[in-house]
Length: 178
Image (tube, rainbow, N blue to C red; front, side):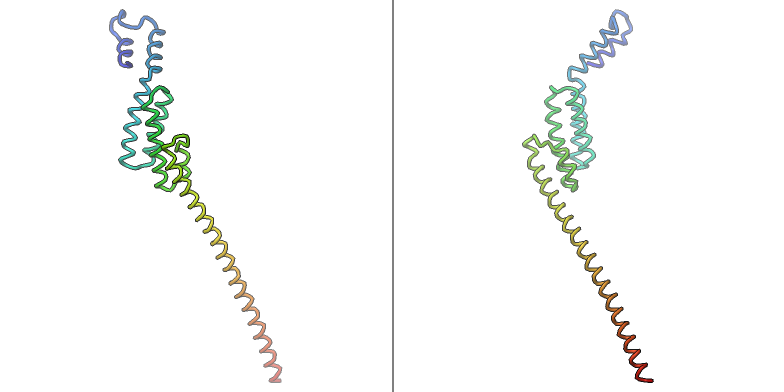
């Protein structure tokens, strides 16, 4: 399709070329709007998704999802791109779950897609558990800090009282010697 348009535009004989720039532009617009670009993006995205599934690398999933988004943007009629986008986002969210990046997983999963619901539920549950642990840890740090402050204060007060008693004892001892 694009190759044919290029060959026609670069034909050696003028009769074989486009008769006007508008004819070339029209052919290219047809090519762009006809889903060819979308199919090319889909093929690239499928390759990226396969690589991501092999490596498990979250950046590879991100690239695949972006390529599928471009394919869908190029042509909404490309069902393969729509299905690939859903699959890549689901796998991307699953990889984010494994990495512990729950916010990222929730941002890429499609809440309107029932197939994504189990991963979304796992992400939310894991995020709630992590947030709860962090809250408990923060509370424990504060408690330990307060206890440390109380111990230091107690030691200081005790040292002061002991010193005061030593002074009283020394004064009494000095008074008894005279």
